[in-house]
Image (cartoon, one colour):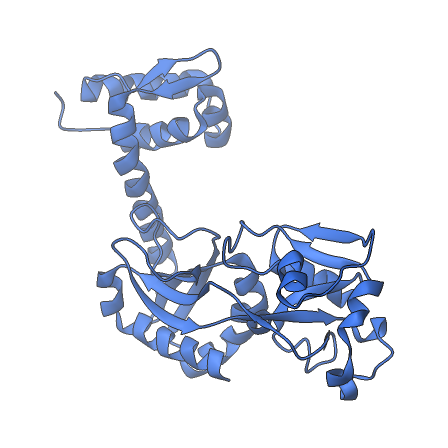
Length: 303
C-alpha cells in the first residue's frame, strides 16, 4: 500500500462524495468527468480499497468511502481555512461565530461596529446556522444558539431569556407612538397575522399565534388571514412594511420600536421556552478572544 496520496484526488473524492455524482463533481471542479474518474481510480489504487459503488442514478459510498469522507472533508476544510488565514494574515485575530439567521440579522450584525470600536484587533466572521454547529466538521469557534443549553460534549453559557409580544407598524393603528401602551389587543382581529414556521429556528421553543390566543383566552376573528415566513426576521420585516401584525421577539426587535418602525400592542407577553446560549467545545473557551467576545455579548443583552 502506498504511503503517498494525491491531495488533488482526495479533494475530488470529497466533492464526489458530497454530490454522489461524477458529472456534478466535474462541473463544480471545472474538469471533465473522465478526469474525475481518473483521480478516483488513482486514489483507490493508492489506498487499495473501493470507495464508491454504482447506483441507478450516480454513485454511493462504500463503507471505506464513508470512513474516508468523515476525515477527508474536515481535512480539506482545514486546509482551505489555513489558506484563507494566510492570504489575509494580519495582527488581527479571527473568531468564527455561528448564530440563528434571525439573530444574525436583527441583533448581532447591527451591534458589531460597537465591538470593533473597542476591539479593533479581533475580526468576527458570521455564519448563519439554524441547528447547533457540528464542531467536528466545521471550523467554528462558538455558536449563539436559541435552545435548552444542554448539548452533548459542549459547554454552554446562558445569555438571556426571550419575551414575545404583538407588534405592528404605527400606521395600522389610530394611536400615536407616544400612547403605544394604550393600544388594545382587539386590534388583532382587524389585520393579517404574520407567522413563521416554528421548527426552523426554535421548535419547540417559540410562540405561535394559537399559543398566544390560548394563553390569554382570546377569541380569534373568523376567517382571519395569515401570512407565513420561514424565519422570525422575515415576519418582522413584513410587519415593518405594514403587511400585518407579528409576534415580535423582544431582543430581535432591536431599535424598531424606538425608531417608530413598529409599535407594541398591549402590555402582555409570553416568555419563550428556549433561551439564548453561547455554546462551544470546552477547549475553545480557553481562547482569550472568545472570552472577550462572550463578555461583550452578555452586555448587549443588558443594554
